[in-house]
Image 1 (spheres, one colour):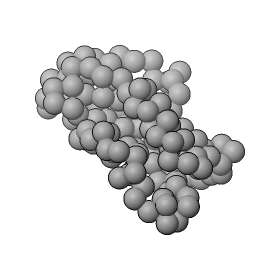
Image 2: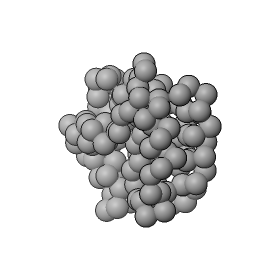
Image 3: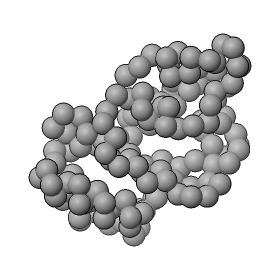
Image 4: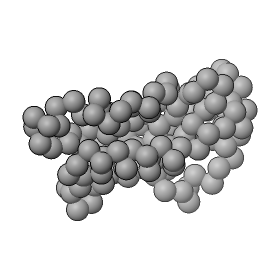
Length: 130
């Protein structure tokens, strides 16, 4: 994982942290196979990662202001790094077969951040490698 100062190299000069989650997500160092974000002022993001022979799934919510968005609420690099660690720890890692079964069999309709588009595309990706 990149050092947080590499993720936000302009922090000292600018004095604020970009609210672009892709900077944090890319700093994990995993291959991002698929990302589906809600197209609104607040919503959810879903990411399918690959790390060698393991596949990871991450979903998280975001908002439009510092009161409802964790990244926008970060005032320091330490806070951004803590958020990054929390997101990283939420990734569900599985083998290709296990992740494919998870995507096919999970009770998505009752789940936080459900996206039929993400599930369908994830299954298509995983069918090629499982």
